[in-house]
Image (cartoon, rainbow, N blue to C red; front, side, top):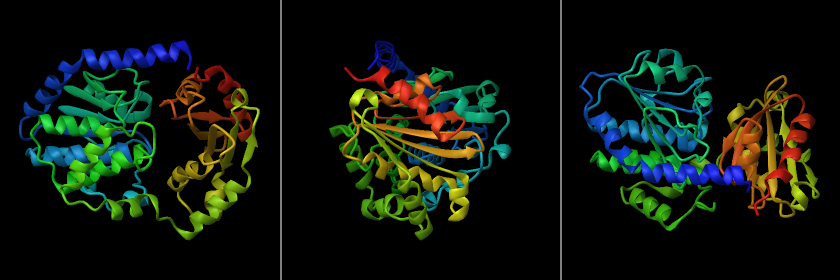
Length: 350
């Protein structure tokens, strides 16, 4: 890990520990709401399980507290990925263009930088108060009240703590949202951030009566037949470069809009494609490049530990975690992977 990134992460941890009194203003921001105050919950573009689950779980908690004028939203195309279509609290969602223009309180979830909020970023200035709940060490420090814990395995860990401080009863609907959030960001409890505290939180959620087996099948183990065929096409063009990343190796592939059209699939199905790619035994780094426009690509990076891919992503104007990160690339797939290849050897973990 580079000295710069190490210092940034250490600073983020120190800031969270020094600002533990931020729990009090976060609690006050909710407790001081009038019954009809406008509350807007926002997560990042193309929401994953942690972003959506954390936001909706918190929204259900606010509803339990009697907050009435409550909306949840995210920037970009208003589409909930099929694996999350049965998540409790979806009735809170509104398209971005229908979201409160001048909310009394904005709460932001799993967003490391304002750019990930798209056109909704203006709500930070328009709101009377803004609270940011996150776990990215690369968080840029926006918002009035920041609860950013880079040691948390998921944003849902921070959300559960805040709900507890608000004396919200953890019911099955809230628990299902937070369990989905926790399970997705820990890779079904397989990633390095899966601490004893993560399992203790999962136990608290399961005690409400949710069914983890059924949830996991819905979230991780169910996809359309044509999505499987799409995966086969994309995986067939994967390339392995053993010499990359200082000899630790890289495997990469790319998916185009034409691939999606050919198999009549939505872009979110590609989110799971990184999993079979990162399983390649011979390499440390895995990369999936997904087309979003003619020369624009969403790039997912994973490492088994030899490379700090958050540092790679930051260098390429993205962000994330040490073992999982991403950025937006431009050009052709070959040009995008060239920028990744150039950065990998600069960010080896010592």
